[in-house]
Length: 324
Image (cartoon, rainbow, N blue to C red; front, side, top):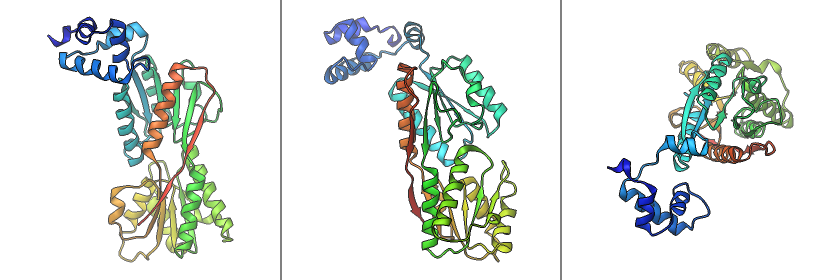
């Protein structure tokens, strides 16, 4: 039966040593690519399957990665998860996903459960940048995405977007398109929203527009007040443009704009989504490179698993503007 095929049989068929087969099946750089490919083809033909339990015991790894996501419903995180799964499969890993819905208690429970399952590492979009490291076992390698913990050194790396720059580019583009009075609806969570607000302020000042704090409003965690905030910015404060700190806020702004008496305004936000193409309002979107974020995060985690004592690496990636 296929499950009984051993690396000894593969070695005999390939005419190489058992050690060479073992290295090839574990994608070792010590085996020439042509030899590695031939051994892997023979293994597939014979129906060889890796015994994950035996391998885990032998190398003291579970070949699992925990992924803790704050909001799995956003296109940003779903795209990252999709990419992470591809990288994991290519490297003989599996990922275990936990969502927290921006709740710190749920995050603590998720991290505790994943650590108890002895994952080899964690990729985290944290809901609690202030205390996240107190919940982590310092021996478990981690990579933070989208949000950066307050601590700057530890057994972790960080991959984040140039949020301030992206927000500033949105503002500048909206001004060039004719917007004169731009409001900002912020999210109450994460360092990400703080950086985006900084970029908004910088661009407004550089354009020599008056910086009116009345135009900066904050949504609730569940976004329930975004419709009211939108009405306040447009009707009471006479904004002709609104920037949403994330696309969940943008979605609720667009839901409010379905009113027939709503004036035409320009919108800005982060993260591109297919449904934006059918909206009738002009929009400027700072698209985050989800494929790059996932690739960099996965590669950093693999390096940290191999070398837990390496210095903390903070990578920032650029956004690109999309106009609708």
